[in-house]
Length: 338
Image (tube, rainbow, N blue to C red; front, side):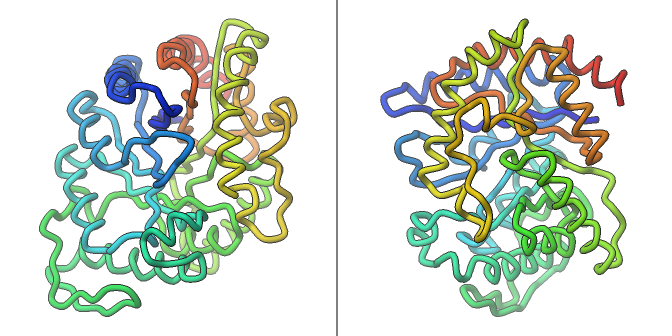
């Protein structure tokens, strides 16, 4: 079992982001000292009412502070970008970390982002596949000639080929069935998001396994899985500290339309905290959180937990206290229980 932290880098309006950034660097150094395996940075644009830090430059800076950790772009909104640019950015990150980059990517769901980059939700699947196919070729071929719907490569080459061969692992974030099948077909593995309950993930896993069979691919060795996580000495203390910041985050994401991004699915992201967290988040005492991780591992087999430990309005120092409890009390209990 591997354990990573999600460093979202989102803060309320009016907060001093430069000061929070320094705290996040300290958090990355602590993750390395405590034996965590990876750092993930998400990506969104135009995040009002939140401030945000951008993904690749942030991870490049973290690489200097925590050189042993794997670094994941989880997830880059691939339909918004051009393949040559992405290939060289991730290739550069892999070179700077001597082969520790993870290319996490997904299709996105927010109209404000698609419009800002000159596209729309209608074309996100096509653009994602065109981009990912081109990126793989740029990483593995000397020169590439290919014409897509929104780019043209004419004898183009990737100037920063990654260290990992044939390329960094490709984690494809997905929750809709079509996207999960795409993850099986095109990715190294499926990267499970934080918002679905255990029962829903079990059904999605069956979709993924069938798609792997159709693609004649084995179940990958690595199964990454992101969750909201918070640990305190008691369950009551954990709930009291985490509730407000988590609900501030989900209020924003609910307003952005994340819960309505899958046609025909019930939108649960506007539920009260006590309902929202059931079989979805890992929050409580060390015993509570260890039991929850073990439960999910035994039911679906995930073996790389990417933990979101910070939300807008929560002091970074609180997240660091949780990291200590995870490393010192939760991880040993999980190792004994799986």
